[in-house]
Length: 105
Image (cartoon, rainbow, N blue to C red; front, top):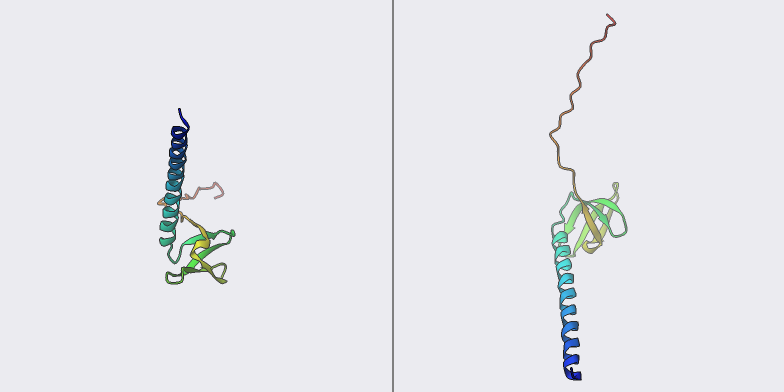
């Protein structure tokens, strides 16, 4: 192989690697944006600093959220939300307690 062919091969491999990793990054950014757009009042969230709270208000114009942390309202940028805590699905399990007759009569 001459040097020109080897150089072209290096460029193609490097370009393929950049395309592949760039694609993965774009997918992650898109998923993150979808999660941020789905935030609504009442959602329990955790910030990037580890603060747990409930969303009180979402301001789409300023890209901010008001977070209620034990009756203290704090304003954060939407980007500061790390993840939404999933709420437990209601269950239909009934707990029955039956009275047991005692022989103390």
